[in-house]
Length: 95
Image (cartoon, rainbow, N blue to C red; front, side):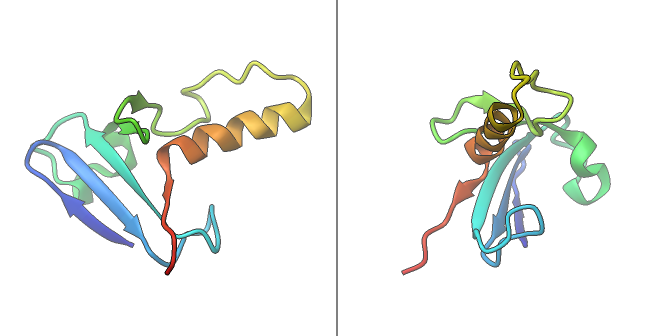
């Protein structure tokens, strides 16, 4: 993973080789920190206020505990969770 951190509190995480949660899916995410003065290497995941979706709108940084899943049916529940994750992890295409 590569990380670009900006003075305004924006952090871009670039994962050209995918990650453990989304194997074989290269992606990137854009996050906004709660406090732009705290380096990402110190604050970690708890320092992130929210992520941005493809339209640039604020979205939950993680779906568990931050986004109520209204579905009881397991298939629908899993599809909702997957959509929440996909909304903030932007897939890269390989040439």
